[in-house]
Length: 436
Image (cartoon, rainbow, N blue to C red; front, side, top):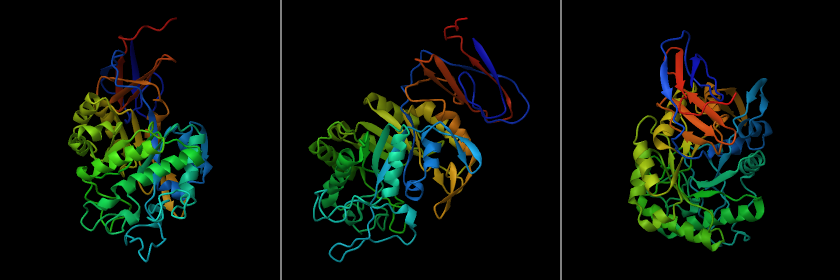
């Protein structure tokens, strides 16, 4: 069974292709879809809720656009919802409340939307019911989390960009002066206590059970400096190990032994592999899933990280991806590389609402949003059709992604055409013929 599709636009549906092309048909290129292949069950698509959640977390239209597959009116455009089912909630690191005359040091380059309010105000008490905690801050991001949950998001990960400011060497949650480790050694466990307490409080009071906890964000980065533009903290692998192990103990102590830890959200594939290989058996045993970011773009050994994860029985998430190409061409290219070589079970875009080409929808500042970038529609070809529970298949080449829904007996193909418009042939002869 062979299906030919003319390619000159972006379209996706069962047994059709999403293609980036131009005008006149050219020679056909065949791609064999193998139903016997199995690259794992798809868990879902997602986004982080900070920082756009702080600015726009109370908007129902944006929640509908990103977390349903409904058609939603957006500034006069009927926009097909992306149907994301994963959200990453950020435990903030900032507070304006001083402690014994000491105050948070703010980077001169950080804007207000990138300062996320933290719940643990001071070191006097770890009791979440004490005056050392304020559970009313960060209401907008929390509201967006609830909106996402109520629209079908079924996996919410708690993650940290930086420990609370008072745990940092220089009291600056943007990083150290040199870009090196900024968590005080005596606060390794305190950082774990903070995240475990937030997780327990969410269970008890917010109606949210985090499906995983990630204590780091690009800990390999040397760019987390005191004059940075956002929250961030460098963690050497030797520092990550005690934090991970303390987090496991603190979650267990709060009857959250079932809640998995993910790590380490490294900037790229090679750093993720190096970090994973540096962990001892105890630390590896406490990491249930490998998270990696996709900022290496077309570089890096995705295949080696995938092999390491498979050999250790771990799934992989690309837990953060973003770039400034508004066209979506870079997104599609790198996403297909992930499917072919990394074999993630989930894929998360960083800021679906952000400035310039970074966002799917542009953030204009002052709590307003603007134009829809073309990359929105490119990502929609994937998210609206490759759905949780589908089995990812070998698409036959790097430009083709295939997914199979056994219950619905539906095959989805998403393909890229990088050049002039042409024909793609999909060889489906290895599938059973449809009944008539």
